[in-house]
Length: 368
Image 1 (spheres, rainbow, N blue to C red):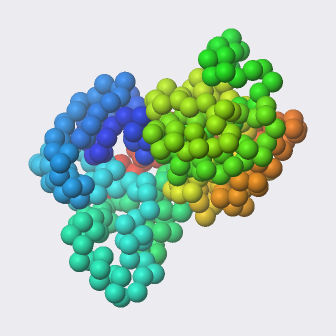
Image 2 (cartoon, rainbow, N blue to C red; image 1 turned 30 degrees about the vertical axis):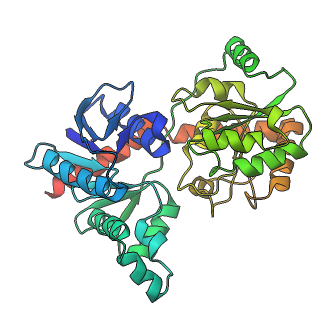
């Protein structure tokens, strides 16, 4: 098939939703002709690329509207068999929803005056109109978690047809003990230290404040490694009493060595439609501490004490510290979560995800 992917930025370093597109296309490109239509392209995957050039000086809503118009021009005339979109607009036949719908966050449950104020904003009105095109009759809407399905139904009604296709994960290679030792030395970690890992594009939104509070409650051998540290992250860490026990790594698409160096993964996120990093951590054999389903869509698919330790409240630093220390001190609990997490990750390969999309594409083609 000739498949076009519409995405704002194509590259793993841009975030979880962007990594979803990269890894899905990595598998599909083995069997299909893939073209990427995007504003930015930064990936090791070499595919045909049609750039959408737009001035950064334009406000975001104008950039999104311009992208939708350019994408429509690129994809018209039967140039592609399938148009697979991760963007607001009308061009995609397959519309993948990674984040909370705008209509849900801006209109659902609000009074008439606040709803009117939303519609009077050119920015919000544009986003709402573009999102409406994504769920128009004839589109195949795909949500990356049950949480997004529920939000879509609250926003657009339960009759909206939504498929659910969770993100995938690649199997991790066996741990290289020598490389693990080198990486830990580079990070200033001793053999006795317990390294807690957080990988995030925006660590503050993924629970860093609670993690810093928890770290201050834990014995000195507990250390925190944050991959994806930006300016605000560094400022928050420097203001913490536990700053000396935190190692910061700038954003990088190559995070495998940090999973290998860590002892456990912590994900007290405040808002994740799914949460790809904890799934990747499970594939690397790390036990996981994670936010409850109200904050993290991935937790809907987990059993507390079997696949992960699920927090009651991700804002509660003391509760987070207790969960971390339980993993640090209880070898049987660690082994149980590692086994449960690995089993779950093995069921969610990118090859299986790609097969589900191919089945969806075939349904669309056969219905024409």
